Amino acid sequence: GENVEQHPSTLSVQEGDSAVIKCTYSDSASNYFPWYKQELGKRPQLIIDIRSNVGEKKDQRIAVTLNKTAKHFSLHITETQPEDSAVYFCAATQGGSEKLVFGKGTKLTVNP
Amino acid sequence: DGGITQSPKYLFRKEGQNVTLSCEQNLNHDAMYWYRQDPGQGLRLIYYSQIVNDFQKGDIAEGYSVSREKKESFPLTVTSAQKNPTAFYLCASSIQGSRETQYFGPGTRLLVL
Image (cartoon, rainbow over all chains, first blue to last red; front, side):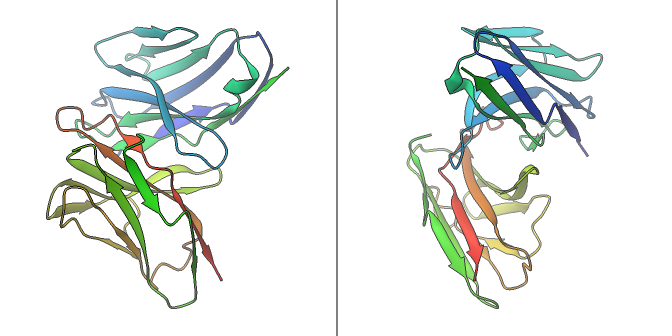
């Protein structure tokens, strides 16, 4: 089955710097890759997603890149702000199904 | 995702007791999912349902049961066979045609007394 590895597990940056979180997946049939942001004690919120027919997608300060050959995708946050502090999860669909397999999360801390 | 509700917010279970977690959605979504979240473990799929009266096991179904009698509701029962039930339980739903895009409820934190 699908295995999703996420790195780093913790990331600390200064306000205004960029943050990058990387995920690798094992199933070459995976075709959908969402990113979720989860604040402490709250529900995961979908912040951006990408499908396998696209190499990059951007939404204001966040962007996601996908390298299908290498089976990895990354979340990029520019001009970080303290409110970006949260745990971020990547996920990938299992084969051609709707089932998502999640990474273990990255705790991002943005220091003012 | 404001249309997905879970109750209660906190739930306490005694040894040998079955407890049921509620998940309701008014988004007219076809598919619903239950995940378990443990610290440092990410989210793991317990059960999912694509249509009413049908559901499938996820990766960690042992000790859990579900029903899907109505499109809006997908309750999860944590049975006494689940020996380590303490976790944060999240329900999600998605719409037909984009089932992989899942939206989450606020979660239920289950604690064992």
